[in-house]
Length: 172
Ligand code: PNS
Image (cartoon, rainbow, N blue to C red):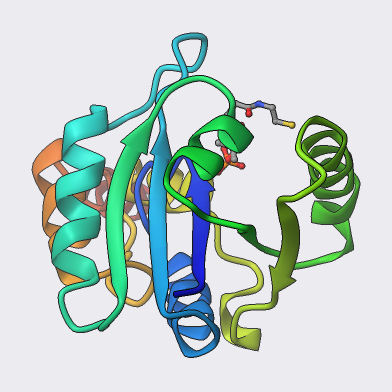
């Protein structure tokens, strides 16, 4: 049974992540989206919330599961029998960071291979960071994230700044 791990912060999961997960699911029997607990990086959503949102988003993807981990990714990968790490590669700008991580992971665990999958072209500009920024400023994020995530973002940023933009327009 070929198992791959797809690690990330997933704060929150986007349609780009989901697209990569779906591609990975066509290549592996089991794909585990693993949300990293990073004590030095505080996210918008708590770890459990991120896991819950992923759970809802992957409900229709057979062979895809979600978990969380702490510590070194390669140790966790080995502990669950995952021989492959999946990472999404959107643009050249991703490459440097991904290259460093992949080679460090290879040094730490030569038996764990990293493979990169490209999301659909229309998701190549998408990132959790931008989605949060747009949501925080009242922009529409429905095209970028699964329904449950869009709902969670709306709850997180209840008052839309769009109102502010239109009143500024009225004044001008
Ligand atoms: O979505 P992100 O934030 O780009 O994901 C980065 C992640 C979680 C994959 C990376 O920070 C990671 O693997 N963290 C676990 C700790 C670890 O193994 N660090 C060494 C990586 S070379």
